[in-house]
Amino acid sequence: MTLKNIQLSRATQSWIKRRDRKPQIKVGLHSELRDWVQYVIMEAEKNKDFTKKDQFLSLLEDLNHTEE
Image (cartoon, rainbow, N blue to C red):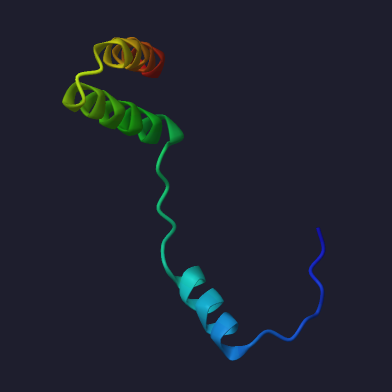
């Protein structure tokens, strides 16, 4: 991929410089997925949707086994 020589606005240039200075936070997709599944389980429990809760509990168990 090649970048074209384009003139960027000052705001865009400033934003790019700030972004490049900040350390990049790397979060594993696995942990994000696990957090989301836990959230869905809590919502299902709150809404008394036990079928959905059981399905996502099973998924969470599978996620925990694949991480090891």
